[in-house]
Figure 1 (tube, helix red, strand yellow):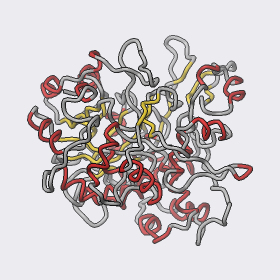
Figure 2 (tube, one colour):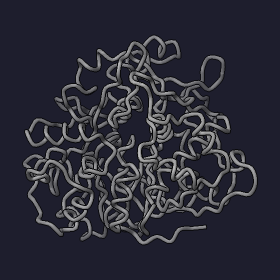
Figure 3 (tube, one colour):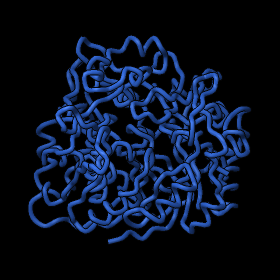
Length: 497
């Protein structure tokens, strides 16, 4: 089955982990735009919410609608804690992803993504999307299937080249087993490793009907858009064209990488995306990165875009998954002019540049980074590699250095690497309490236009997703952007023109 899609004008960015939650996506979708939930780390977030007692009962309400018998009941028995955890109690962890997983491990991933999309779609007729990272390969097929069971309308994927995803969506819509290539270091020429997911293997009896959602890869170059349009394993329905001013993971610069005085990768002429050439492909496209302003929306519509994708403005609204205290921390710093964003080429274990908000008391500062004991207990950003026994194993550049070196990693790869998995969970108020009582620190991400948030707030202490949409649509007074913020025509934003 295939979804019937009317393109939205505004896509709310899929900000992980859990920032783009079901509440935010539902608020945006109910206003006629595309609300997006982040699937990154969603299985861990889901079981932590259960261990915190599922306040309000939202998860349990959705779990009662899950179409595969016995799965929700097993998850509740294993993870649900009425009243929440005891003070100082650590979260119970899920097994980390591997090339081959148990039926129960796949089921919890499917269930988590079903619940998030199901709640986002509750009570309105709007469209909801799921955002995943191509780089985090192993959870993706089960995540997609769970979202499809809930009727997800769009799938958006960046941080890599999602060439195989359209074929996976086609296969899952038919109820077929699907297989993907595993990116692994150390394979010989012509050697290939794969991993798979089979809907029939996680349930008994007939499969529920699902439809195939529209697929929008997030790309940073004309050549990648053209390649995916021609050579993806199935239908591509449009593109999100993302410039390096966007938050989260950015595509690395093309060619030899140079760095500025702040240690940020420098983007140049080879990284420019020509929107007129994108339009020539003939598919809908949206522009992201410095797009959170009505002037930018009007500009991209004039060159044939369907609209914009906006993250930063939505990240700090009332409905987002960040805790209220964390939102006040960021917005207050922005209003005082004490916030900046660094494109950190070392932070992410993926090797992709990562936009890190520079704030005292967070993992972005040297003192907090040095104080945190290194560990890798979530493992989403691990790299698969072929070990000296010829088997596929996993390592992470942010795990303990000695452990990484024993696995054949190089010392230089560990320098400055930060545990994004744990830090982004901490942003939601669900940071792990590690051995010895160490509480995982936060690490925020935002686009380069974060400093413009103070102007958008205009003295307010908080705002809603509806305020953002009204602003972008031009239904409220348009405020000028702050000097130095990314805006149409700025040096950084010309990389998408």
